[in-house]
Image (cartoon, rainbow, N blue to C red; front, side):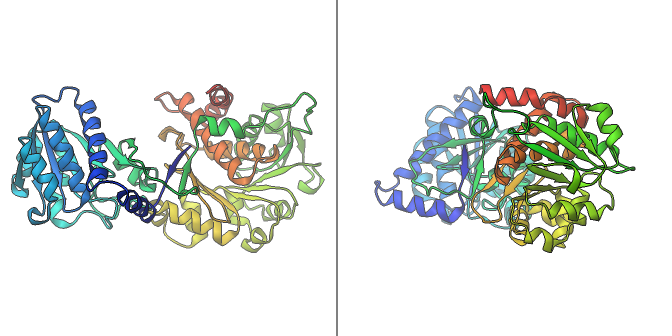
Length: 477
């Protein structure tokens, strides 16, 4: 499992470690890892042209010391000093001893244009609100250049704690981060600016509970249900799907498709799209008598393609089993009914639906995904899976937010969310907690999307058909 910690936690850990180390030793550890990553990216260091963009903090010091190491290996290294009087003195002296040179910002454009590699050390993890005006031209020059771009700890101009980008920022091909991941490296829009991320260990001792968790194959494999020898379809769990309408029968079909592949032993469908469901999936248990008369279930999924059927949504919310609320169900559910539930509840909005629930503009959610998912979970007293380019899962009780590392932009297709809802609902019925069900479902769904798309457009039904392949891939490691 990958973890990420906030700025203040990282700084406290750095202070504790520096108190036990010789002066400057921690920066040398970071610089050594940074220089090694740059050398790997360059391939051939000797004769290469490296430009350092150096701010006034320790971030700039890391860049200067790394540049000195590259210069000693034969690279031509030039440091662009944005604040010459406040540049890290030790790092600057080391660079000059190694044969590097320092220049002012006025020389940056030509140097960047000719560079093989640009090292972004303008702003560190404490930066807020995008680059300052004097640094903005550098971001433009970097964007136009052909050089590989490496960010020191995180790209300058992005928010380390939230993943927000509130102004101009550097776009990196590689970010070399120290000690631990920072939340902004895992959450869009900042994640998009980070490129590939390489973690360099520097010996930090961090708390047991991080800000963010990103599950990996082994973590998901431990969560997935496996039938025992004595299992039957009812012991494995039964998931109820209350979805679809005369206008949107396909939503019901796709939700059932996801549910059938999610580990529960049986799927009950309730709603007006029974004929479409049974024609596609004859193993489904279909009823038109409403949720209360459908038979026993261990979890419900309600809302995909439901139209204006508020009565069914209310009926499902009154059930004393875990419930997943999606799509139209999010609009139709009474907030007080959601908060009053005692059984686990998982809400699965996309950014537009989350914005409507919070009473804000969509771009506010998209630009501040971490705060939005936490606010929704706290406001509704439910686990929340916020879908999108970065899928996040938050628990009502706080604790680490889960960030999903799988997926592809090709998953932005009609019906994809219906498949995810069915899959997560099936995992709820199989006994997973709301956060675990949402996290595991998002992971499998994203992986299935990658397998189905393979670089080309994909339909939601294609994603559903590849869930089994994703499941096997996770279990086999």
